[in-house]
Length: 383
Image (cartoon, rainbow, N blue to C red):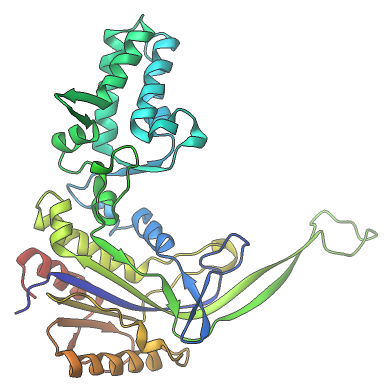
């Protein structure tokens, strides 16, 4: 048996004629690796699609999971806006509370939208703010100065010489202050570093196992109401970049950190890992959905559970391989065998693969059994 301190997830996904993740110029993201340029999918792009997926394995479908909102306008739209419909509270009072809350949540620059950074707040935190704002407005419904002072005091309370920000109170009053997303992928709160949450799920940028494959797609648009005697030219002409590739992806779950972020619940952590494996295997990142339909399932998913520090298998593709899943799997297996020879095999392994290429020490499973195995390993502490 192996104790799963870390769960490592390696994947191969193949996408044809797609524009999965764009840079600021509208072109596919790229990275140099092994002396050649590869097409890349950023970790931010991958995580957003996993956390917003809406299917049977959605993270929000997990019982006991708290939702979260990432926005610059949580106070304005989720806390103060509902109070504006209430009777008996003046606009001056609402504005005073709103300004103090924005400064408390987003920092000194939070009084203007342009001065705020998008912040991830868990639904328990949003509900906490709603209750406090409602109580302040009820107590000082005709005194804007008093309401503003009460709202400001909520965020900085003196205890002797110690100043304690209110995010500490959030953590004391709820089991998932940053919601499930904060517990998984972490968050940074500039107004209170003590409210930061370290990510328990570490996600690498995915990249093609071969040199980039791209072309510029020229397209034209026909005007349906164009008359026969009018100019026969197109109503619009444009172009966009399309790429194709077989991508290597790598994700690490820090199991103790995940359990800790989930208030010590190994049961909830196991469900998270089980859902996450399904999402990684089946949820595709991508833009241009209507024109490229960039949907694909993983050709391979290798899961390892062990105590040692994780290590990516990206170097299996430092020298580019053929853009075929069988060739990539063979290269990955060969690199893994070399690592085992040098460092020993101390991880438990399971693999799902469309190809028959063997992976050293890995038992072959389908996706349902693979996800269940990983979840059970987190729950029981044995793999």
